[in-house]
Amino acid sequence: MANSNKVIDPSSLANLSEVVTKHLHFDWTISFTEKKIHGHVTLDMVTLVPRVAQIVLDSSYLDIKGVQLNGQPLEYTVADRHPSLGSALTITLPETVEEGTKLQVKIEYSTTEKCTAVQYLEPEQTVGKKHPYLFSQCQAIHARALAPLQDSPSVKVTYSASVTSPLPVVMSALLSGTSEDNNDGTKTYHFKQNTTIPSYLIAIAAGNLAGREIGPRSTVWCEPEVVEQAAWEFEDTEKFIATGESLLTPYEWGRYDLLVLPPSFPYGGMENPCLTFVTPTLLAGDKSAVDVVAHEIAHSWMGNLVTTSNWEHFWLNEGWTVFIERKIASRLHGEPERQFSAIIGWKALKESVELFGENSPATVLKPDLSSGIDPDDYFSSIPYEKGFNLLYHIEKTVGGPQVFEPYMKAHVERFANKSITTDQWLAHLHEYMEKHHGQEVVDKLKQIDWDRWISGPGMPPVDPKFDTSLADACYNLAARWDQARQSDDLSGFSSKDVESFTSTQKIVFLERLTDCEPLPHHLLEKMDQLYEMTPIRNADIRFRWQQLCVMASYEKIYPHVVEFITEQGRMKFVRPLYRYLYNAKNGASLAQETFLKHKNFYHPIAATLIAKDINLKQ
Ligand code: BES
Ligand code: ZN
Image 1 (cartoon, protein in one colour):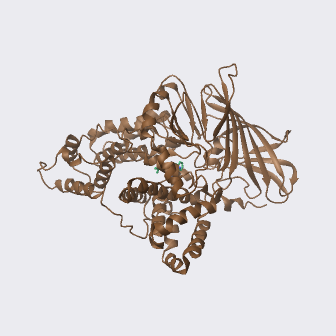
Image 2: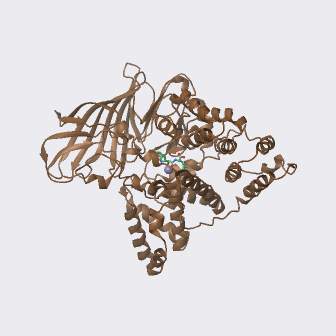
Image 3: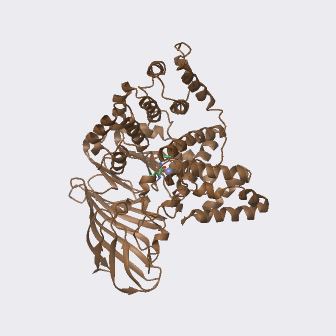
């Protein structure tokens, strides 16, 4: 068969149209000393067409040791590496097989030191400093660096795993048993994920992990030193899950645990099923960052149950998730809170559009990835916030939450356990509205400029006019500072200005100022004196404050920026700060030197992207 899989998923090299995986079993041994995982994967596959002669799998930087079909060794080749998609592993079947044939393929292999899916930490890089640690991050296309498989979200599988390790192991699955000691200081942990998932949701972590129950179906896992704080910060988890259930369908996954990772975790959160991974920068001490947990919980439906069929439709995961996350916020804290979050999102969207350029193909809601672009290179707020805004606009157009909320539920029911494209989503939306609300609402949908929303670059075609009731105080204060550059009299400002501000209001105040001309240094100095910005530990505020200062080339802040970007590796903070520092006066070499010195601290995905951002060849 011709390679029509290109149509299914431009980011996979597998022959997806000929054969499909149903179940994966991993039998792994972790070696912290070698920084490797070795063992085998067994793929239960079924052919989809007649006369299948080979199986092509995705792989990346793997050491393949042998392939067997029903116990018989098979011939295979590992192709030269595609720069972003990895190396196709082509397995030749002994003879061509008919459509509907079940094949059990067992591959023995080991990961290598180039593995982009896993970061290994030395004991010094952990809180406790005594034990090593490892964690994976497979989204978008790094699962192929953990195991040879069909690394496409169009394929959904159940999985099981047996993992032998000297330290406790957790996975994106349910623990089904732990062996007694293996007499060599290791134990074997057994896992089962019985709901079908795309490969990017396979996840593992191992280290000195302790658990603390925080709800009827939730435990927070982390190093014992921070478990107390984590349990407090995330105590509202069950409320978020229950709100998600009331908006959508019953929670499918049995457990919802959280794993708080070491500071180099490159994302805010990752919705690994049964076990969300989160950055320790969420431990703000005031629960101000738990919207990330609400977001990851929303993925339990949007993304994990209803999944994008390939990375061009990534917005279906993230736009929908942001939409549900904000629905949860409005249920728990009122509509103004949702509007406030939407305002913050709009600002993030604007920054992404400015960064890529308003005509850039990377700013399109459904981008074209057919040339083999690395999805990591296109990662931005665009699918999140343009996606949110499209759904928000549809909600308004069809008659508000009364009409839209029942539809959200119908969307999940229609597509649960499936992978879908933007066209499939759109067809169902129209079908649903016609069936439940008739021609009148269908006519309203016709007013939407779908082509521009979905395929046009730049900002959305519609101004959302969010309610600014919670933002006005922030805007007013920002305007006063902006105007103060014209005068010498700063006596009107006092520490009281921000006394009643929530963390989020401080963020919006600072964000507003980053939209103005850089502030003169004496104003930044005064602001810091009055509002005590530099010592604030809340990562989101710290980020925005440092951004404001670096954009003004306020050199006094540079050492604090270096401190912040080398003590945590969340890309949302480190990538922009490296970029701003690189572009600031006397900042370029500081940025490059800082990165080179601390390169090993960062997760491999983050390191690659930061290096590109500040013009360093890796
Ligand atoms: N699934 C994403 C993280 C991700 C996306 C990892 C694409 C790799 C490739 C996760 O749900 C997410 O969106 N995290 C956000 C937090 C959120 C509140 C917007 C983050 O990490 O900042
Ligand atoms: Zn997300």
